[in-house]
Image (cartoon, rainbow, N blue to C red; front, side, top):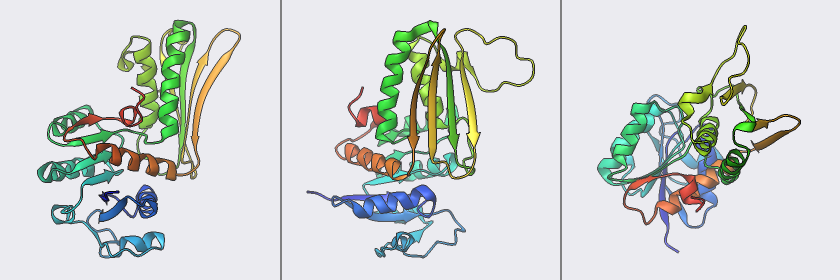
Length: 268
C-alpha cells in the first residue's frame, strides 16, 4: 500500500492535534510537515510530542520549504491563513483538504480559481455522519416542501469565532436548494424585539456558544400538529479528523478540481 505524505496546518490547535493523532494511527499515511503561525510557542518543537508520540517532524512557520515532499495539506485554520497556504500549494502542486470556515464570497472565489490548478476538498464539516445528515435534509425538504417552517439551531464551544457555523449554513443551503431557493433570499439570522409574525418560506438560524461543545446541529421542520427534527451531535474532533483523512485519500488520483465531502463519500 503506497504511503501518502500529509502536512497539517495549525498543528498545535485542538483540531490540529486531532489530525496528528489520526495520521499517526493510519498505516497508509505519514506526517511530512507540521505548520504553525509565526510567533507560536510551539515552533521548533517535535509535532509528535503534542500527542505523546515524537516523530521527528519539527513544527515550523516556513511554509515555503516545509511543504516540500508533501502530497496533501490539511488545513482547519482561519481564512487568511488558509489563503496563504493555498497560494503555496498552488505553486508546489500540492493538494488541499480545507475545513476552515468563515470565508467571504471573494475568498471562496479565490479557492475556486486555485482549484483550476490543484485538487481541493472544501467542506465546512468533514464528518461522515454530518454529510449523511445533509442527504437526509435534502430528502426531507423536498418532501415536506412549503408546509413546514424550517429552523437551524447550532451550538459550539466558546472559542469558535464565526457564526452561524459553516455547517449550519451548509445545512441551510442544502434545504434552500431542495426548495428551489437561494439561501441568501430566505435566511433570517437574528430576531430581537417586536419582529412580527414569522415570514412564510424563511429559514431561521439560532446560535449557541459555550463551554467545550464540539458541534451540535439540528434542523427543525415545524408543521401543524407535528415537528420533525434531524440532528447531528459530535462528541469528539476525531470524527472530523478521520473524515479529513478520507478526503486526502480521495484526492490522491485527482489533478485538479473543487470537491466536497458529498463527492468524497459518493453521495452526489
